[in-house]
Amino acid sequence: MKLTHLTQADFQIKPWKNGKGTTADLFMSPAGATHDTFDLRFSMAPIVEDGPFSSFPSADRRITMIEGNGLDLDFGDFSQRLVRFEPFGFDTELAPMGSPVDGPVRVVNVMARRPKWQIADCNVVDAVSAKLLPGELCFFFAIDAGWQTRNAETYYTLGKHEVLLAEGAGSLELTSNSSGKGIFAKISPA
Image (cartoon, rainbow, N blue to C red):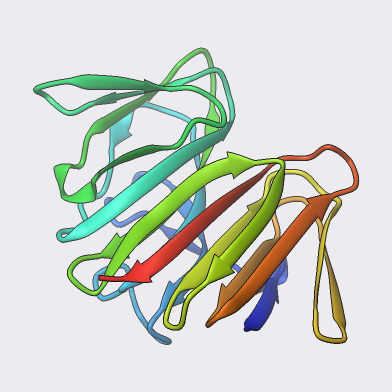
């Protein structure tokens, strides 16, 4: 299993596709992909005012609010209120209108483009014990500092808002020494 530790120095700050804000692209695949050509995209963004979400045709999204009092998503036919630490999934081509509740929010997005990938799991956790099969990828986002894991002879410690990617077959164990929370997502080939 290959592990990659990404810190804030590795993230790329870019304007939203619709130009209404900025996002930190935590990871995109394949290498050199853009917001129009990614197969996988993990990102973090503040939402400070009402506005439309960008549309990404053929991509599934799991969005998790990590800071703030709530985020209302209006899809036209239905609406959904996001609360902290509860991931919500939708076809991101739908491009809902987002409205922060009582002040700004911060969200983390996991996006996988069909038919190449599917989001097999996405949850807020306080520990990780996972087995990955060949071809699978795991994304872990540390909401809080103090997470740790090791792979062979390498020991990793994750700070707040850092990322660990795990690729290929093997077992992954992550623990927090501070009762912290993180977002764990397993991505499988479709």
